[in-house]
Image 1 (cartoon, rainbow, N blue to C red):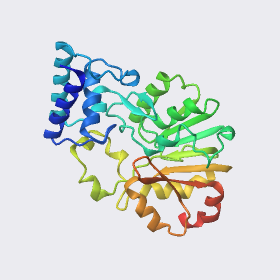
Image 2: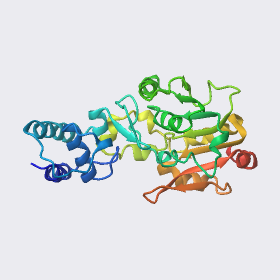
Image 3: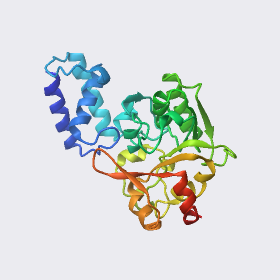
Image 4: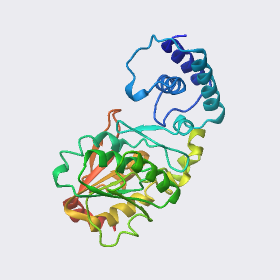
Length: 294
């Protein structure tokens, strides 16, 4: 069977199983291609586009096994493969940390220009780092900057340590167990990034089964989804340099952010899929509107 035919067949199987796609892919076709290539030992990152290649009996057997595991367990494929792609980079992942899929990754290659001058970035903070993918991906671009990657979960930080070592940036990324800024007294950064928990209590109960394999702490944003975002907005200015920038993904709580702080001129960045769920605020803007967050 040709690769293209196998992908088409697996796509139909995934659709019939009524799976949810949102942990590295957003549709059955893309997930089928990823699954078949992984099962067949085809490197997704270097794939030459030869969809007509014939798959061996062994490759087809491995594909069938992987399809069964995905459909029966409802685990995200990223966990089954211990692999996830983020900001054009492959990362290790397991159930100790959320599967990386932050919209923030779209602006990492350009280092958040024009809102930030990359040449002036020396110190970066990645709050709620999870598996460390945002910090590591940005460290690969800002190769002179130093990073603090913070998470309340020691399990997640263990995954982040694996990724920092794999990408040879351990010497520039300090992993810190902390409840947000608690363990960072007096430290200031040119850039603070945060992909916090922002799912409301009600929405958590309605999430697809795939989400049940991820740490619930990575989602829980409280009654309105703003519990952590409020704290980040209230405390981040004290940890930014004078020309610093705050970047936060608000996700499903984006409208709640706008409603809660209607006077604040958030700059919302539009993702490739048309969503605007990541906002930026400069240190100057936080100076001006800081009382709104207290």
